[in-house]
Image (cartoon, rainbow, N blue to C red):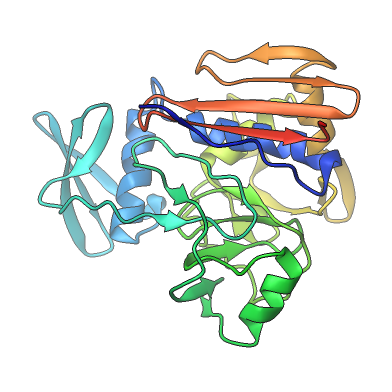
Length: 288
């Protein structure tokens, strides 16, 4: 049965349209031609080991993953990689306050409606009172339990071991963002976090870069809450504007993975299906 989350309005319509497109790309990744990348991503999360340290050995229809002193075997079932001997679990990591859930491929819903109980860790440091109370006042709701990274400069956030999963209000004081927060292996750092290859490829795409040689873009970049991407103080472009331009100036658009969106003066929306989890997500910005 398909479950559709109700569209949620955000306070910053000038950048949410583009950011929601970024999220739609991340949610849809894994469909066709990316089996090895999917496997490394899953294994990196399960083994708490950066992708760059993992080696893959073929073993019949299975794959042995070696890295960080561990050896695990994975099999492809139902279009997703599963670790042999792992116990199935229905426990999911909830999304921080005020964020529309984004279902990731190969999971039963990486993020679920926010919950206020349980420990909250942000950028490797547990949050305690009165930090949680201040966060509730700042974001409008108490942070959800989980292990998160949060980029206070841009407002982007995600679960540890994952790329961007949503956007919150920027500027809340937390521990420094760690390079390894997303277990990225792209060589591209944004505000100190090494982003995933999915995020890197999307940025290259919307800025019309050289997709055949992504290594050209390795380095450190800065992203602010308005979507301005800079390097060494030099403005490279605006992510929000580039994403909007890549999809056209108006009307509706469709992607081969089933995602669709549209825009008109003052209103943008995106619909993100996920065939693996049989869920979908809708995000609206500036629409009455």
